[in-house]
Length: 150
Image (cartoon, rainbow, N blue to C red):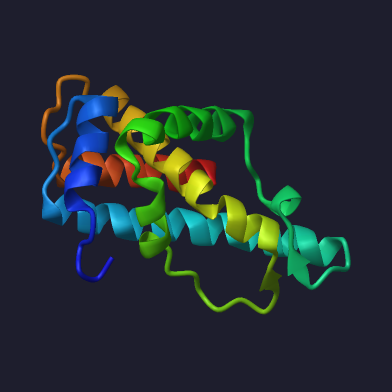
């Protein structure tokens, strides 16, 4: 998201899902956050694909929990109104991996990342229930939680 395409849509997503106001610096943080979590999911997927003697990461290799799946579904409902999923592709900066990323993973990547965003927003609201404009502290706490769980 080098040119911050879709800032208004992401601002609206945070307002709708978390009653929060974010700015361009938050959208940059979001970009880094999504890429970090996506990379961690792909690392686990790569390990699982290797364990199954494959050189392609399938969607079934990714550690998509019931919780993340529920957040993906919530994102899908919200996305019908906001239409931010097309911008998710701009967020994805996938690292070079020794294994190929399967078409099924690529097809669902925007949905997975949308679920990550919904989970992030809910996490921030749990960390600081009254927060209207997330600050560095909320971002760092949310990052620490995600790094602990993934």
